[in-house]
Length: 162
Image (cartoon, rainbow, N blue to C red; front, side):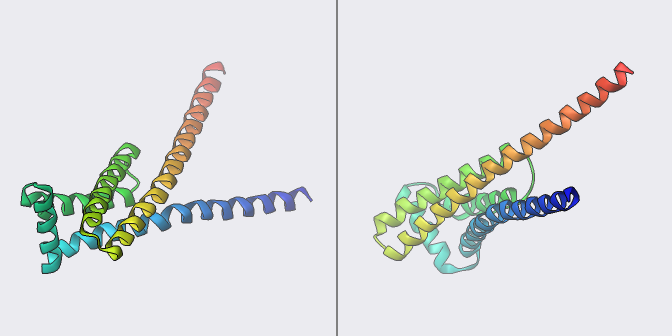
């Protein structure tokens, strides 16, 4: 009977792990897809390039920032968010993305295009969901590292004691 209970609890943990992974990867892939799409649109379409130039001029910043730095930075941020690299680097990528999306939202509010405003709000909400799941992911990774460290310390202590 206890074996059945143990197997049942293992199955419940696996479904919980899948739910956590899905709740993280869903918004993250959507967010990164939006970043990559917007960046590639600047590089490979004339309308995207024209919009980028208009936004740079509206902000009174050099054109290379809107046409090269922001799209390349967005692609790099998407790659970092999809990777399992340093959590601090991922947090920085999320900060870059928030800056980009809020800036885009302010610009489209000035243009008064409702479809673009809705898209920008959707991007910010997707960012919020992905970032909150990223914080949970970082917390879980930190707990796993702590547990491994405590197990290693206990093993060393047991070796020294014997």
